[in-house]
Image 1 (tube, rainbow, N blue to C red):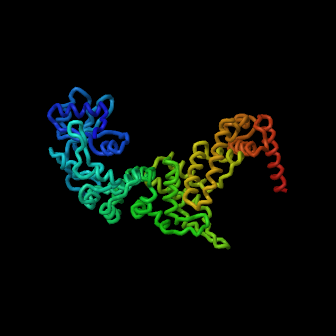
Image 2 (cartoon, one colour):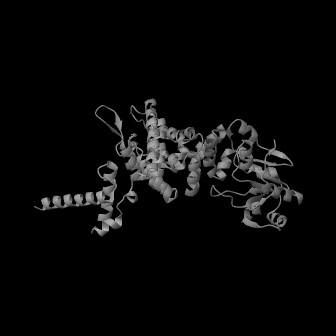
Image 3 (cartoon, helix red, strand yellow):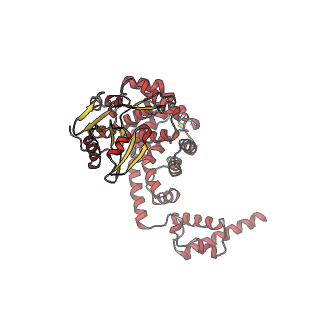
Length: 453
């Protein structure tokens, strides 16, 4: 099989070959090409030593990206191409990185240190595919399998445990049995992985094509990195709305939602505090009062621990806090939600509620029609230019200040006027808004005088 190699990458390979060296694209770019996907980037492996690589490209810019580990970046066609010397890793002491790296001229030795068979293939136009460990077979059988002994691979680098889950979720692959057993046995090692790397792998896992079964089957790995989820495992909901326990519901909500990182993270965390808020009513039906508010706080703490950026934390927390909103195709309700959480977050919230509903009893799917209608109404409100937030009022803060309002009084007045306009009690006209404002002030003064008397 021929693989299309971009011209700038092919230039690097041909240059190395012309100087008597071996050179191949390797790893994920080969895997993705064999699957009919467009690779995000292309890595090149070669038997040329780092200084030899630099000498081969003395007429172009090179960067000593990780020269101690054999990696030189060649700027080719205006893009960076990473070129790495065949290498053998030394002893791993921190379950993440080798203490030393030694270079080798044997391709098989380099490929044998890689994580999974599907990532241990290389290719050049000169040789075709080189597959020493059955990567093509495992691609055909939809399997994630370690190269060699899985316990050794995970003992070298604990991040590989999370990468295995991520690849299985992304491609809807199973994890080969001995690899799976090693993951369960060695999952405590994930505590050696940095928060930033855990965060990256977690988001990729959640945004895969099939995260549900991975989340369920490997809940022991997830609860190692997020122990707050332990109380969700096997927690029956005792509700006529639900067919799964809390953790299963979480997993299927994620999978059955729009593939948007904010939406999937919100669904991942949305019910994390259900067990702590569990209550029965008089008829024996379970309820979870305020679980959305408590869950948003817990999710925020976890995301900060995993070094998420502030924008993501704010958006995901907002979606969790509002995910319990009852869908209603009502213009006033839509405008109030637009006011409270904004246009983009309302669109995301609708997708969160859809994902949540798809992981419940079949009658809950009736919400989907209402949610679609809400989205249409939201777009209609936005297009129409109707007022649903402070900066759309015909009366501005400066106008209010000119009438003697100061400090927090101005913000309070704008808040009151937006709600009055949305409810239809006041027209969004400057004179009408000012009139309503003074009427409110007079009422407040009258109430104050009455209480003093």
